[in-house]
Length: 265
Image (cartoon, rainbow, N blue to C red; front, side, top):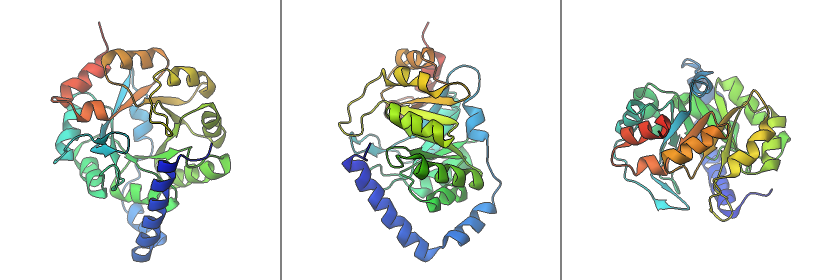
């Protein structure tokens, strides 16, 4: 369960970023800044527990597998369109090199959208969790492929709890789901995209869902490109879907979001 090369490359870059940033603002200073804002605990999780299928709509400009996906000159406008389309939460990429995300995107969306916001990044250090809180996020992403043991994952889960954030724990196989459950994750996502090959297996969520048991909020991620697939995820037991590329490319993001969660006749 070692991290794929591209994933490890990005994680190493982010470790360098954290080391540099801590020279400018220490962790203790960052925590004071973050704690000056109201704790958003529970908002993200509650949003995914609404009746029907919840949508986490993503502000996504690019990815290593797809290259540039969409020009998004005004992420706030896109986030508002997602909200108009019935999205329950917004995911904002903040990784700058490969996904072209930024702190500014998250801050703007968190302030203007009115929805709970997920910081989607390659979080490998408590510093990045407190950044998310300081920027206005309600939740952050932890990727088991980067934190492959309970001993690595659980401390960051606890740190997020101390910061007042919910956590979406991303998995890609049965072993990772087991690590997430043992570490105490209460929101678990299954990413259909293989991080080694970038191929998508849309049946993966359905196969892994039984391993999560009851009481877990579940999210199906990647490869959801039409309402039929969204309904497939719902029928397989997903509480929510996370959709980026399909929505970011849409000419009418609000209507596209509405169609996804409205299901099919």
